[in-house]
Length: 513
Image (cartoon, rainbow, N blue to C red; front, side):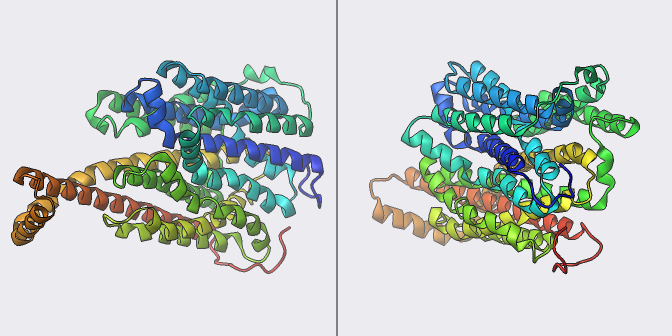
């Protein structure tokens, strides 16, 4: 559709709604499984390390397929490709619910990730290409439900379904939205002939190096902390393969006339800075969603349903806020709104750095509400900033780069935070142990109190209890350090947002074109 028209047709809006629903479900399936992993591992007789592949397999398949979506649309046509991916996603989801072993679950999760991956960048592209400029903020508001709201409610929904019914339902619920979006996109997208001749002209070396590089990079990030990073030979090899493959891919794309992905778009200041800010959002969003459930489970002993109830405070308010953003963008520049969102998110995360042993669900409520207020103010304006100067022919590449950057930064953030929590827990425990002789009287008072309150405990048991309290305090301090890192990254996202322009023009002086 031409960008010069005043109003989008109902058919184009139907396409955008269907694609946005697909993107929402695709992102939701990244997070919804986290609260139920223990149940699934138990049902499939898998260890914690083996069960981690249930998430890793999906992430690897998705992050490899997202950049290839633009090219596959050219080969198969948009309608054919999206219908195929929806069918694959729904079928794989049903098979995941029926999985009889760990191996079958991993295979079906790979297929599910392949089917889900294109739904994210293609929804983004449809908003840019099927809606006029005056309606794109509304379209981005729909898309932001997938990028912002889905990760916020994923663990909550997964925990509730698992505790109330069964973990199988977290896969079966994809059937109804899958059928709905298949019908919506079938009715709204034009039938176009496939161009299979493009397979002969394809940049197969670029496809190979990109796929290999992203797959090994995702494995490196997902498994590095579990395998002691470069203390593991397989991690060293995957890091080396990822580095060589991605460098080769970059060189190929910059030297070919018709690249698979137009990496030269990153030479545009506004798109580059918006993409870097988007990476900050990805780390802050996925990182905070990763830390909080882990803390509540490990330190406070919450089950999946209780964790979900806590996280709902950061998810449900966004349902009310996201529809307001397009209206605000008519009066306030996207740059100001995104900056305000980063400030609110960074502040909300910073509030969690003062945790103590009594810091549980109720104490997180205020920070989650502030985070819910800030997140919608980032995604929609940031997407508009990123795509504002992109030509229609470059939209598929820009969409792939923008969305891959957010998912990849989320994986990097989770790997970084997992390492920080593990290593800083040991570090803080050692430092606290070193200070114990300085507080000998306090330790003796604590032992006397334990003797009075729990006289049945032996001296060794009392000392063990104090040691466990020390370890718990060290763990809490490590989580606080992780929240500090997330807050810092969000501040960097704020800086990148400000640098999308040389001029700090915050208030609009005219209506959006």
